[in-house]
Image (cartoon, rainbow, N blue to C red; front, side, top):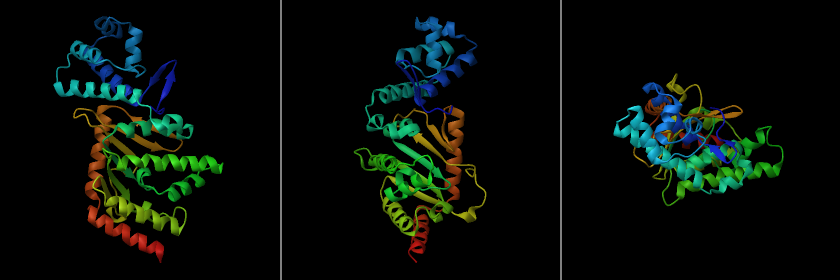
Length: 295
């Protein structure tokens, strides 16, 4: 689904609700039941079930439990995962985060909201330093190179949003970040030599934090599972909550919302991480590249 968040009247379709609705739709189809049959057990209408399955409305725990029972899903881990998603979605809808008052967040608003309730982000980047690890000058150079941003004030607001996201790294419950970066992204001269030198120095400082884990995939690694493009796997505190995946594509944002596909992305990430340099060796390579920008 390309849209990260869409609205219909007073209802909002969120990533977490669509993920949960999709899982319940899968269970209903497997059980051979119709929306009217599901509605009957909820004392609701088929239209409400349709809205639930499309992620338009928040889920009550009793409704999730009742539908799982109707569909014959008795696995406690599966039911627990669905309940965890329902809880996360309710919390996400109630949140009054700073990004809600920032129209410049644009299509990133839903991603920032997800990042705000996440406990861990695994990010694979093929051509850029991950957003959570960028300096303001690096982010500014990227915005300047994008034809979409013409007004200098707009660019500064975009940079401010990028920098403000990084507060999660130092929060009371700091976000855990595992970044795997292709070596070519470290050598790409974004903003000039001085900007890149400072960016790589900043990356080294962050890599020294206990909640930031940085690995570099060297160019000599050759073909690898994640060669097609970048993505982020977002994880949550609830033990049974299922990961969601955010994929960057030109001109739009794509959320991977099925259990099987998100698990596949996790496997891709883990396999690519195993092909990458160990953290200590990655830091040495980053420092060597940084010194090259100073020469």
